[in-house]
Structures are given as C-alpha cells and as structure tokens.
Amino acid sequence: MKLKKIVALVSSAILAFSLVGCSIEGEESSGESTGNGSIGFSVSTLNNPFFVTLSQGAKDKAKEQGVDLIVVDAGDDAAKQTSDIEDLISKNISVLIVNPVDSDAVAPAVKDAIAKGIKVISVDRGVNGVDVDCAIASDNVEGAKMATEYLVSLIGKDAKVVELEGTSGASATIDRGAGFHEVADKQLNVVSKQTANFNRSEGMTVMENMLQSNSDIKGVFAHNDEMALGAVEAIGSRNIAVVGFDSTDDALAAIKKGKMVATVAQKPDLMGATAVETAVKIINGETVEKTIPVEVELVTK
Image 1 (cartoon, rainbow, N blue to C red):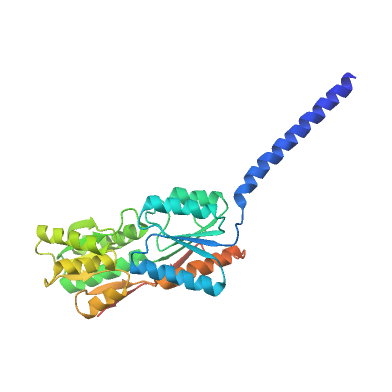
Image 2: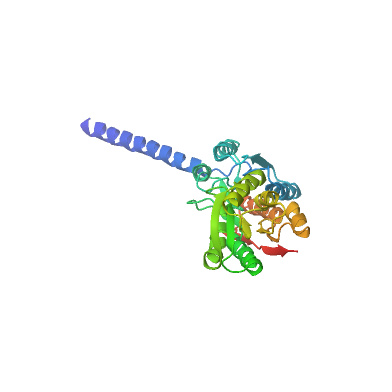
C-alpha cells in the first residue's frame, strides 16, 4: 500500500508540474500574436504640410494594396502619441508605423507594441533605444551638411548665423543639428540657436527675438521649411540668407521669389508609400531591410 501511495504522489507531482509548464508556455506565446492584418500609423502631426503628404502617401499605397490602414494624429503631443499607440495595440494591428513626436518619449509605447508581437516600422524619425523591424528615413545629416555648405558659399566664412531647431528630442532635430554644426562650427559664427518646434508661427517669434539680440545676422539654417518661412516673415526686407529643409510647396515658392535661398528636398509621399509597402511585406512573411534610406537633394533657385 505504501508503494502504491508513493507512486500516486509522484504521478500527481508530475501532472501538476506539466500543467504549470503548459501555463508558462502559453503566457510566452501570447506575446507572439500576428494580429488581424491591419496597419496602424501614428503620425507626429497633421498640422504640417510635410506630414500631411507623408500620411497621404501611406493612404494611397494602402488603398492600392487593399490593406486596412488606421492613421492617428498625435498633434505634436508626445503623451497623446503614447495613448494613440496603446489604442492601436488594443485594435490588434499587425504592424505599427510610427513617426515620433519625440524619439525618446515614444520608446516605451513602441516596446509595448513589440511585446505584443506587433512589428514596428519607424518613418522619417527614429525611435531611440529600440530595435525596430525597419527604419525608413531621409539622410538628415547629409542634407543639413549640403544646406550649410551652400550657405557658406553665399555669405562667406565666419559670417554670423542662427539656427532654428526642431522639436527637442526628435531624431530629425538631432540629425539635422549634427549635420549643420559639422560644417558651421568650422566655417561660420553661430551666434544663437533655439527651438521653434518645427512650427511657422514659432519660427517667426524666435527669429524676431534673435534679430533684436543680433542685428548683423547674415544667415539662417532652419530644421524645416515651416520655421524657415516663419523666419522669412520676421526678416522682412533685410538681406539675410534663409535655408530650410523639406522642400514644401510654400518653400519652393519662397525660393522662386528670392525670399529663401535653398531647401533640402525630401520625398514624404515616397516615404509613406514605402512604409506601407514594407508593412505589407512583413505581414506576408517576407524579409525586409532593417534600414531603407530615402535620398535628399539641395533645391535652389
């Protein structure tokens, strides 16, 4: 009888351990869901022509590919973007395309998506500290270098210049600033730099303040065209060379009129389309490149 009891106890223990093992295994696999085949796109803001074009490129490609694309606008609010991404996760999407407001602040939400088995593509701006499945962006450093070298050729070495920076923490701000300073710190006199959050009205206000402090500014490098156009409004009839970044329609018109000297052309519609095209490949189980660069070029009159 004792032997039978021992055997029974051992059998019960083995069965209990097996059940626990199954439970643990189930919890691990629950984070590997493939989703429902839809794509979520969290865009930093739709109050900017560049990102409107980026979003439209994504929508057009989604329609062409016959896939469900959910676009949400963070309104340049990092906290709202986090909430938007959590909401997209709850919708059981298969792929998240993210255009961060802040490349650091968005990281925890993106990590949550990855933990749920959602594949992630960053577009235009990176996600700091996160290994995404694919990063699609223009070469912001090289574009800023080209723009600054052109500025030097127009106003000469050691001329006083100012820098209008984009949203703090955004990878585009970091990269464009790095490209600018790689040239400017050696060949120009950078007398002031301040964020205007990629916004036209803020660009005008910041530029007005800079002009009050430095009346002999010869050049402006703005991290995007919206801020550059704001600077143009503040500058008025003064002879100051303004360079932007993005090649928006308004900036191209300003260059034709001689109000801006140059901008760096990106292809936001192509970036949006490429992001959706890449997402579809991932959903279909295809291998994609970890980084997909989109070329830039300098546009002058």
